[in-house]
Image (cartoon, rainbow over the protein chains, first blue to last red):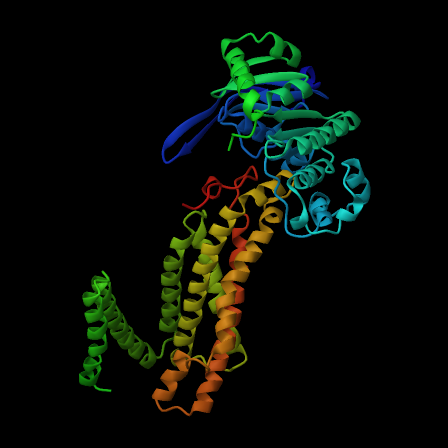
Length: 260
Length: 255
């Protein structure tokens, strides 16, 4: 199912819909989203809370299955992949880092261990994210919030993904930790050439780090543009008022962090 | 003990009932229902056993054991409603436990193939296996819900469902076996086990009674291990769908 015409897109959505049913109440989380993210580009996803951004990310590594439509990763539909291989190729990091009891090294080794491999160079990875190597033997209980998120990210990227899904990874962090995590990701991206899908509440972050930006509201992709154009000349009324509203909010609260 | 003296023991029931009424515990109805049920069930079983013991055919023994297993499965099933196909997994786990433990006792000729031995001991194994299955399923469901983020992290690192759920299953096995192991440590010190009490009351020499009690304790311990490990092995794949996602029933915290 390799599709030559779109081989250059890292991620491509074709008319995906997703509906959750809870207590017999259907919620239409995604209502027919189509779009693509080229290889090596960073897509920043913005929009109100509950608009379906996180759900869209989860379709890329098949943690959720679309009800309708297709999701192509490197030209191959997600359901045609070997699923562990897909999830190794499409790495994912969450808002709250979940670390397992044990040492930092134990946590870094999780990915390789699943495939019966050993992590060869944990010290180099620590160095790459600006953490001291002597942290490796420490219990994860001793880490700060920013350190935890960095460890969770390293754990994901040492799996060697070519696409990285980031779901509000800095919204629980203070400004200086946010900066460190942003740098970690941009440095890694520069080296690896991976594509990134970055859901963020922080409009300034979306503006600084994106090549392209999507505005998602109520499960629909209302606007897709290159990031610069999106923030200087938004085309839709909804995007314009969202940016305006968020900028006003930024003055007193620094923007992010309210999405559960 | 005559039926007349047995009926005098209803005084115990009367005490419980009076306390419940007096303190308005709201369990008066349950007390009556359970007393009536226990009486009728045990009387019927007593007559059935008497009849099975006197008949020469092993068929009835086997039938009794199978019925006990079926009732045990039906009982434990409610704990694992969220797990698809839980009833046949329970059937395998509880049957295996009963057949292996009783089979071993028969094989090494510790007990003879007579209904007097096979039926009550099978009942004990089946019953323990049932209680342990309920505990295990309960633990598995709540552990999976509480640790769903961990499971999702492992899945998103490329874990297969068994890899992603293994630590959860192991915890559920451990917590469901703890009561069995712990109760062995104090057995005899706090209270004499039921079987031993019954044997001593029936006039058996206490030392002989202890031997049987030990046999039963050891068998129960292995029954607990066999049940939880078999169930754990069989359920670890059933918590996921074909796209290696945790089933939706486990993606929300318990209310």
